[in-house]
Image 1 (tube, rainbow, N blue to C red):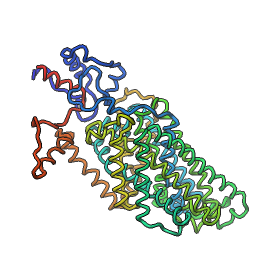
Image 2 (cartoon, one colour):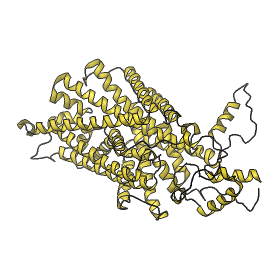
Image 3 (cartoon, rainbow, N blue to C red):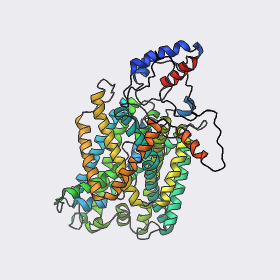
Image 4 (cartoon, helix red, strand yellow):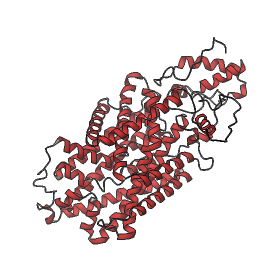
Length: 565
């Protein structure tokens, strides 16, 4: 190798900040050696200015010697509109939480007035996070969500850990949680007509949950447009459902009987009995935030939006606003129609509401159907967005590259969807609902916190980064402080789950060291494992076969320079 040509990567160090001067000099050296017919495509100044972001499109003037997948094989089509994005947020947010959390929030808050304030604060906190994510998503308009932001701000390790935990546990766990709830309500409809007092057998719930995962994964494998259409339809259905519940509640308010002391929503003493414990309000807020979870999912598929700079901020702000209004109206109905003693003990407030308002098994059956549809929609949204985490991690070679393969016919991340569904199915079969929720929440909110901190860091390290939507810096600081407080509280309340979550995240560090720092690809390590099988002789033409391939197109081009020399 000629010592006059130093070896430069796309990034000068592990901070994710590109070294453009060295890149441009290296481009000139490479182009002198390439024939004219190898200079395909164009490289606009805007593309060059964004090359340091999470963009995996090949550089236009470099022939990728080590790339095994073509752009057609690894790039997802831009099919999503504003309405599709809004449907993803609403579909993911309005799941099972609103139909279960009303009772625990009231129990911790102590009064209907305090509980409604908790729901409002949780909605405002979700909206604050959404606004911050709109800033990040328009500044770094790439699929993968937190993966792109963490790599840009902090380097490869946090981004790798996000992809590692997202692909192996948090996204599949989210799917498992939602489908288990969906399956439970379907089983109740089939066996007991929606009765909350009769528990269906565990094996039936698990079987229905696995079937739900298989069907919804099949829909998303077949067509991203069809998956988006499912979200559009279900999102409308869920908003209509919550508006119907709110309407019933307003009718109940008009009845004289709902204003007696037996019902918590008593306008004369709305805050009577409110808790004076800060810890109790924190737990109430945590329960409400679980119902709002999903506001960040559109950022994971930003690269599939037709116009992310315009549609992402609109959808990600409109979504939490719509969800907050629906939740407030629904809880007014719950706290109006149900007596306080029922609210204090219920974990299925929507079913109790249906039985109280509509009477008998018919009300339970109607609510069971509504919750089943709601959770099926949320599961479909989780499958759609979760597969993109594995897809982006595979595209960056942090996870096996086959996860980034796009089906040639259906144009969907087929492999990522199948692997995700298999992991989710295993979690359904071996896990419990409570343990999955606690584990998922702690890991997910830790990465929410890190993503918001990335926004603050990028304001300092890259002040000239193009930001089509720029949020006031106080908003990410408020959100970060609130999230840190909730994480500390949840760790104090459930220390074993917190320790397990931290250990699992840290388990990705040695994998990162091997894959990223030492440069061994997953395929290479897999071949070495195959060699250990007794009697199997693995044939390799070179000792370096399977070595980690450079992520930068400039490194790939440098291989060409060295080959010519």
